[in-house]
Amino acid sequence: MELVNRTGLPSQRWLNFRKWFRNFRFKTLITIVIIPGAILFIAPFLWMISTSLKDPKMVYIFPPQIIPNPAVWSNYIRAMTRMPFQDYALNTIQITVLCLIGHLLTASMTAYGFARLRFPGRDFLFILLISSIMLPTQVTLIPTFIIFRYLGWVDTFKPLIVPDWLGGVPFTVFLLRQFMTSIPIELDEAAKIEGANFFDIYWRIILPLIKPALGAVTIFVFLWNWNDFYYAVIYINSQNKWTLQLALNALHRSSAAPDKSFMEMEILMAASIVIMLPCLIIFFFAQRLFIQGIVITGVKG
Amino acid sequence: MKKTSGWNRLSLTRKEAIFGYIFILPWLIGFLALRLGPMIASFFLSFTEYAIISSPHFIGLANFVKMFTDDPSFLDSLRVTLTYAIFAIPIGMAISLAIAMLLNQKVPGVTVWRTIYYLPSVVSGVAVSTLWVWLFHSQFGLINLALGGIGIQGPAWLRDPDWALIALIIMSFWSIGGGMVINLAGLQGIPTELYEAASIDGANAWQRFWRITIPMLSPVLFFNLIMGVIETFQYFTNAYVMTNGGPGRSTLFYNLYLFQNAFRYYKMGYASALAWVMFLIILVLTLTIFKSSPYWVYYEGLRKR
Image (cartoon, rainbow over all chains, first blue to last red; front, side, top):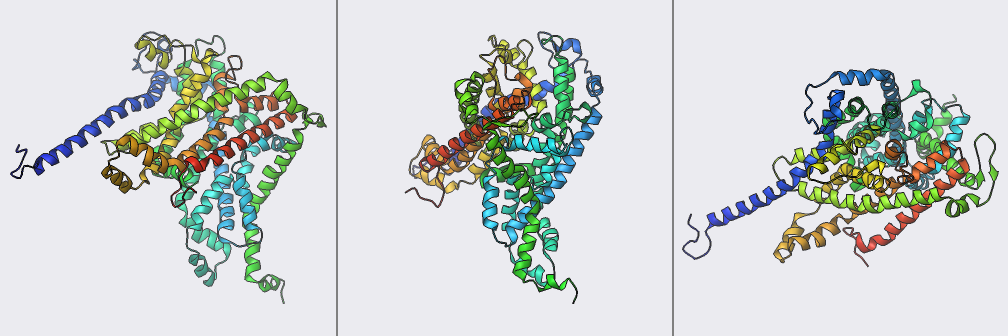
């Protein structure tokens, strides 16, 4: 390669090569750092899958068997029949779906009221809403428990569902309101001239326009309820009302019962994977919405 | 005239106001019945002794006095929670920023790498707790097997009072994906011209990082810091499932101790007092971070005075 041209300066081809090489070297370096980290992050999942497919005799051996041979798929059947998991799944689905409907409906209604309608005291009430974002739930937990207990709701699904029908959480209201305020108010005015009332505007104009935000809220609310252990352990006692999280906790305890060093890890990991799976599936199908939701909460929140 | 004419005679402003209240009604009921009311109630309960079966009786500041003078468990829970916060939050933020910066480069397969790093934060709850119980198993857990592979005898982790909290801190780094994504979005919002201009002025990579990346990203870091503090005080599931506060009280997180007081010992008054102290600590920490923010958080369009 001609490195220097007639003027004595480096040739264009050499400069291009040098630029390409530097870029290549930089990216290779970055990739070399990224890959071990990625292995570290994915390893727990692989270890989990590996354990869930092991013959019980192969779980506690040294050196470990990385790829289970034979792969014991029946561990999953054993895990799911150890307890009536289908009942617990139904309980969890019932709670999650009811929470989702209530949360989406009432949080978006509240957001619409605050974003698009004028009424006395609106700004003051909105400040109250915003400040309650910072309020840790523990501050209201005990009187709320006493109220629910007085109403006879302890050991029912109501304490888990009803709060979602009363405006959801302030954070999602705030998120939806932010989206709604970015829609031009002229749309509402035009609809009013056409004879639409406020319910029509809310239902036919605003809600369709904030679908991405509703999607993000759906994912959050689903994950919160699916993975909730805190409120479930506080409010649910009877075994037939357990959620999946409570059942998995019980499975963990019982499998550890006789001798702590020999838990039935293959069963526990199989059950854990099944319970995690809906979250992972939703993530893979709605990845963009997912990421978008996180970003909105972090950057604009 | 029919009755409906009363509604028709209302001015548009009135109608709008009435509809406004109708739309926020579910929230307003929730706010009064599940937030404001209970908040006031728990404030009063915090000055009482209340075992739920009998009615509460007033004991003045005794709950608060007991907390700081006669309750080693409380002081331990405070120490555990603050230790976790001091290590897990800043290190976690640094790791998530480092990964975000790596994944902000256009390397081959970057979307796959991003997905892998993000994946752990998609899952949570008891399944994650049980997974880490197994990973931290002293003999056959993946972590000690890997350490053994490089000739290190790993500790008993969750069963060793000196290591249990460290184990939970290490575990927290696995789910930094949320912070990473927020950082990534923040990084992508920094105009490239800033870096170009700095390079022309002769700034090296280190200077560009401290003089451009960190200031431009500071609002995001600020947000992550505050959320981290709040989440640490609400830390529950892992502590409950994995260690139940043990061994000893080495992982007795604040929120777990509050839960035990309320729903194991039925000390509702004392638990309310604990909740209020938690609220005050969060408030003080958040306000401190807020007050310090003019010195390190840079908002575009706002100049420091």
